[in-house]
Image (cartoon, rainbow, N blue to C red; front, top):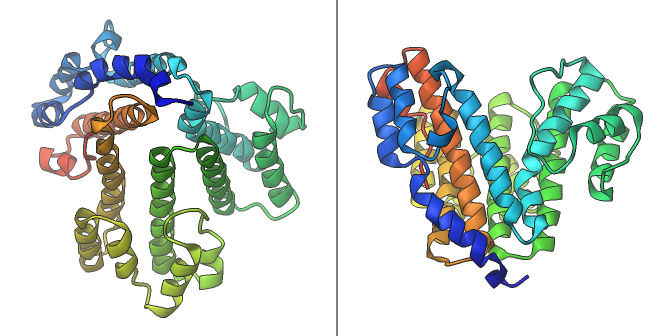
Length: 330
């Protein structure tokens, strides 16, 4: 599809981008003296229209309403394959809940997410009853694969999570290849890289064997499964050379800090920030899928930061400690 077809929706997004939670907004929220004062800062951002009559303690309602607005805005994206890619993680969240309800008795009340590609009730009928009305062959294949693997074996929640993560990325990668845009595909591959690097490091911390950890790696990233396995076996668990090859200086520095401190959280945050920095290249593109994806990611990061700040304020966490948890903004 020609990028010019994205001109109208790109123009609308460019007009909205200045209202997305910025660095100055974050600083004001973090430095606010209390929970209520931090909440008031949101009135100067694109959350303002969703704050009417909302009690500060119900700030999550404003975030949910804001995402509903984003979902409505992106209904104007000309190629629905792109929005399918963007919302796929929300579908897999519901799929994860449904299989855990089926196998482990998880209660679904209050967990189900909306604004998805697939209707929740359609997913539920297929997973619980095997009825596939309303579902396309792609997602049916995924659900059948999961049920085939786990329905007759001892149930392990962590194994289910790992398998669903792998299925999610494989479906996302296939959709990205079908969409055929280098920026979108690069974004997906960077997510796979991040997932595999974290799997590698967690495997080492847990003392998992190479055979076991290799089953958890996701195919399709720029860092090959073969290289990951080789380093897991041969280099004493150090992937410094892979980090140096595939990441920027900020991630390299964060990895060095991780080796000294053993604290994985900060390195995980650095990997997420790496994707945000990749998104910034879309600022130089007038219109196209890149504008939509970068805006979607910037809104996702903003939601995460708001939740981190508000939770910190509610629990009396010092400002500096809150700042250490926050993600880079677009």
